[in-house]
Length: 504
Ligand code: BES
Ligand code: MN
Ligand code: ZN
Image 1 (spheres, helix red, strand yellow):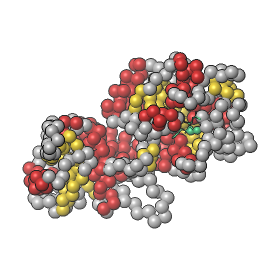
Image 2: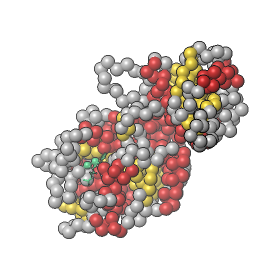
Image 3: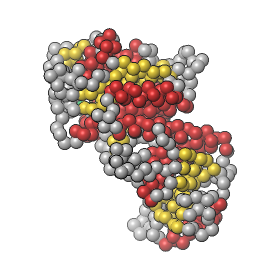
Image 4: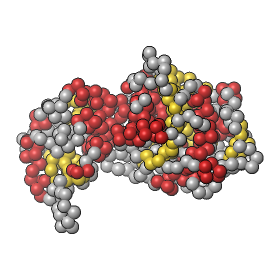
């Protein structure tokens, strides 16, 4: 993985020689009156930078809206060749998450302009806390640096070569460095996930996804195992295998283990990911429109793999096992059919109503296996249902939990990750919708409440183990480019799952 060089400085901004110095501005206008004009101010104590930007801020041309940029060449009194002002929006609503995006916006401003190196100045401690800021700025820079056009034959690699965070001289160096190092690990891990999700189905089969995970695991010192059809039969993973049976590509059962030295007691966290490298729908085939996007149906599995990378490098004092169930969902003479009955690893029988509800099938056995491997707490991530996208759109991912304590930890993790998950209901009414006439349960619950009936399906295999289910169908792919992130894979989940793990 080629990666951006990152540095931390506490030098005086005016004296920094750079192609581009980015500073933040916020709107301090608090009046809601219709004629109230924005009052942008720079979020820096540096007098030289303030002087260089004074005239344009007075002009009223720049409003410091979120991610609004303004470029000044040859700023007076500064060693930097360019001064870029990046807006945070209303000062009263400034958050670390908005700062993360602003850093990404600065990077994405530089990339197409041939600028390969920049310095991003953090606001003063009074505006936002310096530690979380430093980490978020680095994360945002990595997120912004990613572009998906890796297969263009005339691709001009516009990656940023060097990104420097400039913190104020007063901040504690050791704390800044720790936060900075975290930002690098998390940003790189999220981009690792995105690079996997970006790969088309023909370039990343279940087998190749397993190999990429194993290569990463060996690099960062995780334990790993790769299994295929034979092992699925041996473990009696009838649900997982039934999805793979229609494909010429064998399935891959990917296991990653993080076992910190000296930790023998305490919880074992099980991370389970849906790794459908391509979802045609199977015999219940999907319409052609947008089917190409179903290459991202392994985004949940990729999020777990990326989170494991970050876990291996950040070394929390808790054991973690990841299980990723990778398969291709294809129509074929050998494919499973609606009406088929499958026996899952747990022994439960599943009536297949729709072969396109395949994610829950692979997860059913993945969850059972994670428990068998010793997981005391479970979290899964999956691009599971279109219904979740109908419910929450592209603004929030769905989340479900059978355990308020586990959920509280996840909810707290969101404050650090900046990712948006909205808790949706489980309930007996939804469980009733997936009762089968012929067997224990069926794999679809009808038209209504589809995200909840899918979650209830998973709960049958989770049983009483504390568990969180993340439905990232709407959030794993950025549909429209934003100033701070390219159109394409988002890497959603990596940061929140990581923080949840670190909370144990
Ligand atoms: N992978 C899809 C869900 C999906 C939809 C992901 C849109 C990303 C964007 C999943 O396997 C699926 O096909 N779900 C069906 C379930 C239905 C048949 C009960 C769906 O949501 O339509
Ligand atoms: Mn499907
Ligand atoms: Zn799917």
